[in-house]
Amino acid sequence: MSGLRLEETIVALATAPGRGAIALVRMSGSRAFAIAQRHIKPWPVSARTATHCSVFDEAETLDDAVVTTYPAPHSFTGDDVVEISTHGGYAVPASVVAALVRSGAAPALAGEFTRRAVLNGRIDLIQAEGIGELVNARSTGMQRAALAQLRGGLTAKLNALRSEIIGLEALIAYDIDFPGEDDGPIADADVSEATRSVEKTLVDLLSTASFGRVIREGASVVIAGPPNAGKSSLFNAMLGAARAIVTDIPGTTRDALEATIDTGQWMLRLVDTAGLRPTADTIERLGIEVSEQYLRGADIALACADDIRALEDVSTKLGTLTDAPILRVWTKADLRPGEDVPAGIIAVSAETRLGLDALFLQIGSTLSSCYGAHQSEDPVITTARQQSALTSALDEVRQFTLTRSSGRAPTTIAAVHLREATTALEDLIGAVDVEDVLTRLFSTFCIGK
Image (cartoon, rainbow, N blue to C red; front, side, top):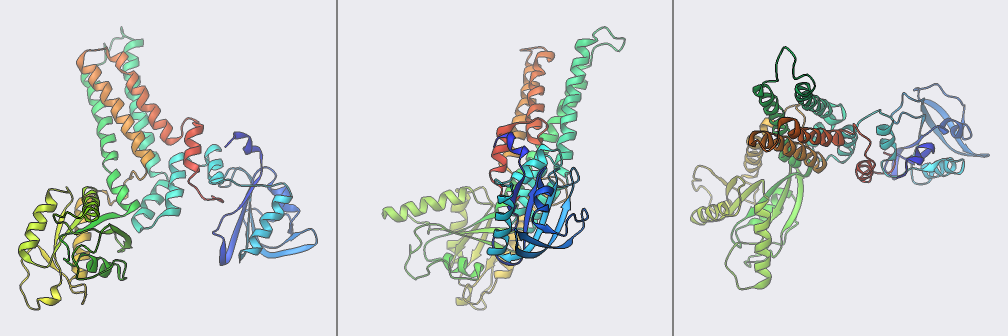
């Protein structure tokens, strides 16, 4: 997107198109008020005050609406903004947008309003990502993390980290510029301590990335076991809907089935997999390979069998295929009424739903054990861009330490790695204007954001 578009006034429907009570048309730019004046009565309206108005195009009334204006620079984008709340549906908001376009507004591109907010200094790139994550949040955990980003929690942490690295650079630069000062040269111990502090902060931030992935995408819960062990029935029962084909014929499931369920505390990606067994059937073998791939990326594995001895064998087998916690699930419990359930095993029945609540509780407890340390209000890494930038910064800090300790170069030369680490953080925050970073980020936004 060319920077020349900053001179244009843009307009878009900011709410989802379709049937609904209210639609919001947003217009932003230096000519927003002049264009609005041609289509809104009464005009002008008081700033930041919702005002009942008529919206018209030439002599035709388009709608009775509520209009709110936000003069620059005190608006979301930093430009003059007009927001028109019309009746919902398809025809009314579309006719309002069309009228504003005919009067000189340009249809907004994806994410263009938020992009202008960044370029005008109203928010930074991390906060912009927070908006995108909040709009796409599918769990309460992601909602909280995105809102924390939008409120600047992660930005504050990154700015403090950036200042810490710059302080370390300054410590080294002081030794170059003032080697003869009474205080003497900067002690190696001071540089080492400051470097360790920076590295620890980066490691701690990166340690939240797996939790960020879980709350963003859902925890992968893979249901695995031998053929005809009740895996597909369990999958359907956990979903509360028939998604997987269930028969008494072993090997019915030839591929992995995936579905998402929100338990309130956690969003889960349930995966029903092909039965694990030796087979000469090429198609079934491919399905088993897919099962093993899912197990390697699982957050939790459910080892399923309808026989205790088989269940122990399945648990042992899964231990060779995944590093994830393994929950042992004794299926078809309705066929064994009154039978004792060994400790550490969850007995369930897809038919009667016996044990499903206990299974969900155990899944939640296991996830809390794995990620409980990150369930506070502390900043969380939620995107691949954030993880990549912080990984680059950590690599550069470690290269500084390695170069300095190995004696391959003096500290003053090794410090170039600290400058690269700072640059990685500046790109992440948006402290420097990087056009391609902006383009990649806002291409994922919807029109009207």
